[in-house]
Length: 122
Image 1: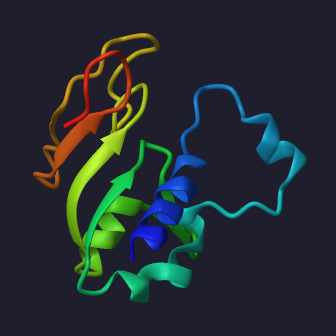
Image 2: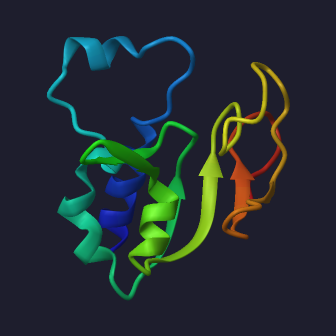
């Protein structure tokens, strides 16, 4: 279980993007990030407590629309406990270089732990 969660977090880390494209993605287009490979792991999360690393670009695409990974996980009744977020915050509300505080997501009521800056994560 721990190996899977570590893998899940590492895959989601590939979703973390800034205004600049990540060169690795352009050089290796066959990389599939966790949000885009939702069907491959959703059944493995049943009955587990899950924390995610995500930002505003962590989207699950289907048909002609998309939904945020966290919203899709909650829709599938995954027991999310915490959101870890990089620069710019979980919903993209912080500007470049702006300090991102730990907070509560207004939409989901989940705790958000900032990974940006020099404060300890909760």
